Length: 105
Image 1 (cartoon, one colour):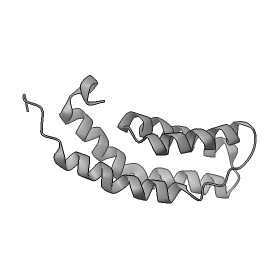
Image 2: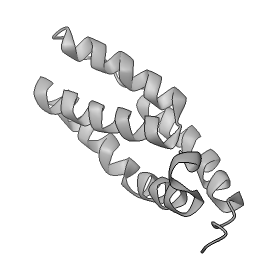
Image 3: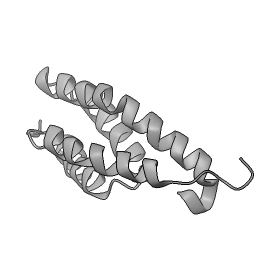
Image 4: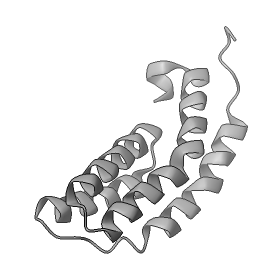
């Protein structure tokens, strides 16, 4: 992502991703808990897309599995989702802290 948009934009996106992560997780869990397939699919796709854009490969792969089950009409068990997100937070925070700003500000 950094190559395409620059460090400042990438850092902003990653910061926003972290800020919105808990809300996205809650949306997925709520939709799955109420067996709302359409809402669950929308929430999973949102999380999957943003995860892919920020480079969170494990979370992206997990969401791909959830998406597959939802598209097959099944309500998946997403118990690992909070753990994967919790593992991601410190790693992404460390990357953000080590990113120097773009040369042009």
